[in-house]
Length: 419
Ligand code: GLU
Image (cartoon, rainbow, N blue to C red):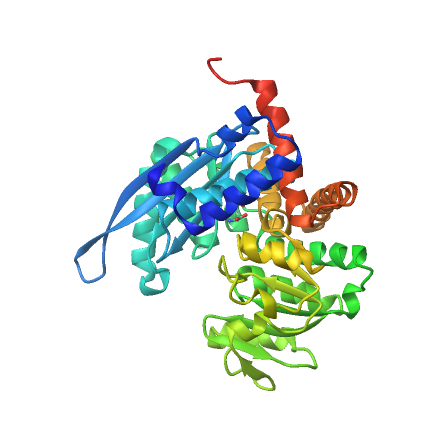
């Protein structure tokens, strides 16, 4: 545990767990188990690089909880990945699936590598070797990985193929977020971003605001940010600023999102988009907008910039973007913070649907996926809002409380093995 407890993200997640446990008067014997991951694994992943040399990258998988079903959670490729961060993210997955009422546990994996520096062949070799190392611990009824930062449907296709080759027959249910042609679900790619918008809409409703007339700023223009902007724009919301690693762009009139999506397809980054002013990532977080959606890294809203944040609603598209301290400060000021475990839940909801389709060999149409995702995330939102109103607590605390209430019930019913 020494390597796990010291990371910033893990500490933050534990603080919010402990706070919620107090609110629901959680059984201390349950809480102590929720504070510890069930299994934490470290792998060495050797890869032959294109120049013929071999490099070894550290890989991780933390299987946090399997109380409610098979372990579930994404695989992250990023140069800062470490065991503690993966454990914190695996804990968040546990609280996310419980809050969303999905029959799944929580896990997360990752490799410490800068995926931008890998060629396609190197990325494929890394993925296939990592999957082989993970092989004994994953499976359609054991642990089901998915994409996260730095990984995508192609990465999942390589994982599915590697696992299937070693079993000797196709195993589509071993990962979710696959391309549709090999057992992926329609609507999975856009699910996290769309979920962010459905939650933003509901948040506006309870704050007596109209989402279709609101302004929004989105940090991160990857898979989540792009689909969130696309749907928000379609609904009439004015997306005034977006950013990525290259920096940000701003237009008081609202950005032309379809044109921006085309621009990014060609230029890879938002920088230089015509008709918009450049701003920094930091400035974007401080804009006076109705809705702020941080959809990139963790810890970006923190004690350094919290006093300058002017948004009325923060919808956490990323995992862990607001620190505990900043969250408390902003909630007290009346800002509504919809936490990651609810706000970015659209992804794992559709992952669950994908897995159901794979194990049943029966595939749904796009409308059924979208409709059921919206229904599931809205139900969770309503539960959280009810708890927050009845107990007079902020939305972040309420989400965690509702989640661990469900886990506590399940853990007490199952009991501690052997006794
Ligand atoms: N990586 C995503 C998340 O953090 C998706 C996980 C999944 O679909 O299993 O929620």
